[in-house]
Length: 407
Image 1 (cartoon, rainbow, N blue to C red):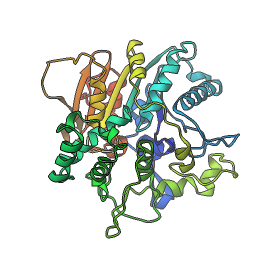
Image 2 (image 1 turned 30 degrees about the vertical axis):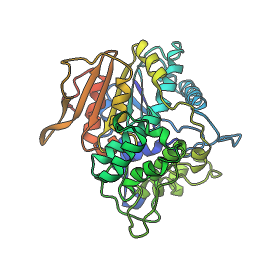
Image 3 (image 1 turned 90 degrees about the horizontal axis):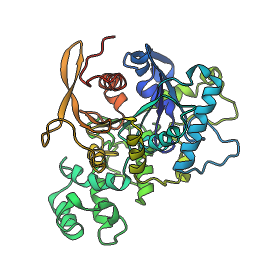
């Protein structure tokens, strides 16, 4: 089978997923050497699968637009990705007709379902489309912000007086059912809500417990993604505290240096006319047109077609949080499988040092699974490589998620 991987943004390079997350090699020594990633997804899948990393949309990474127009919408990107796959099959016909899976993270929560609907309408080229796996996906933009407020509060990032002020004066004393997103357009409540969202100003909002060290020359992929989320919601950029050097993201200079080395660019056949590789394109991001603020219709289409669906979330990510995605799946009104009205069931990672709880799971009718990955942030294959490797292997092989890998 063939597994497609898409990074999000919108505007971030899938080479980041290849090198920083789940690919066969990582970069070290300030971008001048590589080492084998024993938790690469293709290592697990080599007996039955290949992983394809696609730059999306045009203008991201080393990709480019021949007409220099980088303004695209969700639907245009899904069409571009679909056409790119058809071109891939022309160049590599041996992969056409194989079992096909789509995976990705973050804004790929929009890319994947919209692409899946197109693929479901083309049985000739995709006769064996099997399923999708979406990590920390932006499945419902408004509810992402609705769930941020209680999430921050219960992580002790927000004082009682501010939380109660928002609850009483903006939410009819019930933040749990409050449309926080609409308050961004309310002059009375806007500043109060923004003050709450600024609760992670000195933290890494993509992993609340991550230790991240500041370097002014660092490439800020993760800061870029946050800026995109705020831009779509019509929010100002987060405030900066001059008294602290707390960063907006993790350091990724190794990959930046490596991919921009002349010898590497030459080996990759990158035209000399293209600019330096960046993890995320500001130009693509600022011109991007969001049209799918939630992807419920696309999920309903996939479920009706019998496509397997896995939604997984690192549970300490606040950019695209697990509460939002659990509520998104609940809103589909699918039957929960197993014993009713109990806590989510644990799934376990098993390795050389023993077995531990890797996260929690809920299974729904319609081939839909929801998993959390305990202690992981926004980038699960990067934060929890062993657990994500086992998770994907078992998903594709129809095995219990706690089944140990036998490699």
